[in-house]
Length: 268
Image 1 (cartoon, rainbow, N blue to C red):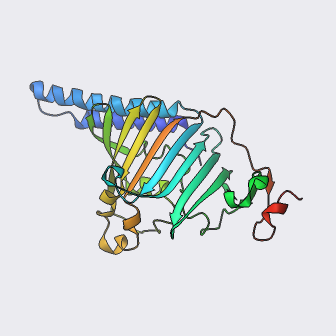
Image 2: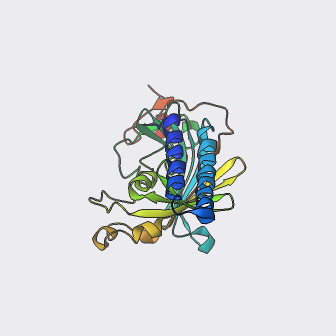
Image 3: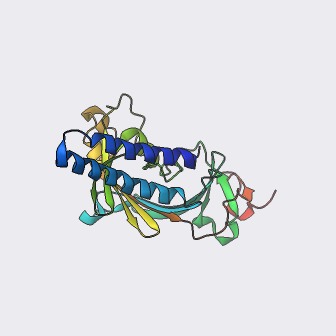
């Protein structure tokens, strides 16, 4: 379900208020300076949330990497997406590298139903879609939360470096934004399990970097053993207003590709 813009903005205001209040205390010039720094931190975070909130249809690009790309991290999954906050519809093009193969698959998410189209079907099947809503094997690399704004409402501001803001994001908010097959259902995760992350503005773009390794290390060993942390060290993402003026529309032709050959997908 799509978050409302009002809810996202309310979360940003809450974060700004939190850092302002926690900056209070003491007396004199030092206390005043600390409060001013906290207010500035809240303003910088709020400005980026407001920028994302005003994008309308959001174009986003995300990658799951083995580790920080600045340290040579390799891509496991790459997603190019468009998301409409007003309808909750998504278009996604996913590149995944598993077992030495590299495949691109397109997805539509309409009214909580997921459809896919493979480039292996050929150009004549470009308008054909097969539903895989309950097919975990073919949807393992998709997130559970298709709204790419997921890092912002849950972010806890830590410090600013120029216009960049370092934040912490709780496990419960991070997990739905990652490939759903990566992290199994984990019960009783400690409440303070967080990932270190940052938000950085770049003109029309807002960049997000999430250090997943920092979060895995905080999981109890028994739970950490259920996650293949070797292939999931970092999540990076950019968001901007969509440059494509077209809307996201439901699939034109729906067929069962396990029953009907893609070459015949347009037959009623």
